[in-house]
Image 1 (cartoon, rainbow, N blue to C red):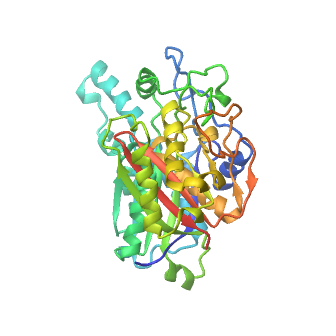
Image 2: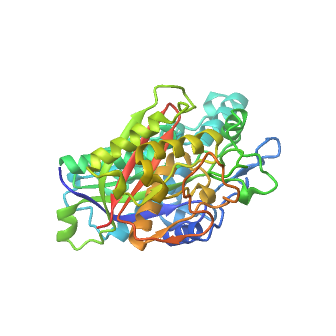
Image 3: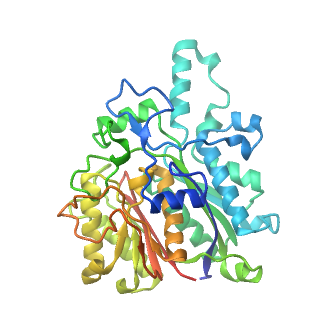
Length: 409
């Protein structure tokens, strides 16, 4: 197995449209949650979300191309360009060995919803001929591969909120086994629409803290009342280590392990003891060939829902034993909300930055710890810590779990 390193990062998030802005917002607990502006939410019980703000797609693509591409694709294109530029890599070299794997949960959900209204009110001839290529989840990877000339492995992982982490793990595996040398990877999502918000609200999964949106996302807090929908993209450039070293690339971290599991239990709820998440974490440690005691930090899935936070905490306790109390754990969803398919990409980028800069990003809005959540969640204030190994953990509807291990390089 070949070594795989991270040589570039890109972020478009509710907290900032570049890496430094998004990272600083996370450190300062500056929330990206506010009243929904993409549409009038007055008729909905949930009227808040974590939207990407002041984003202009024409800064990275022609105006005509922007009109013909959906919001999640635009986010991906921007974050990918950031990551590629930061990496300093020339992707025109040996393009057959360069690929693109992007995780997307829902795709252009809002655009499908809008065209459904057009179909119903104006008839089939008024439906956009671009609807399907505009909306399908794999278009994020397809667009980037076309724009950057990447002719190696290119596809989409769609495992709900684990999509971005699965994409990174699959990209790691392709480079490790030798089917690619460079892969642009991560997650993207832009699914904040009336129907999606109404659907999650009917499940009672969303926070209804409409009057105080910036404190609505409260991972591991006793008073949490659900997650907040978010959007964005988090992209990493992964590269084979020897190639990166030869070209003098900025090596930010090394990926050393990738774990997966399925709960095989319920379409939306994890099993009562968090066994599926525990198996995923244990698989990640086995893949990395490291003992539990070597892990310093976990960027948790930490959704601010009653079930996830307690069961993820229990899973960490089971796998890490006594060392669980020595870990730094945090959920950056306190500021970004839950960016669904993009979450794993954005949070992996935060995990790499934590390793590189020796800072644990805090869990925002954690003021009354849930007694069932017994770990150190780095509440409200970042913490300096030497981080050698960190995990980025994700879970998705359908009981699909994914985790990636990073090491300081």
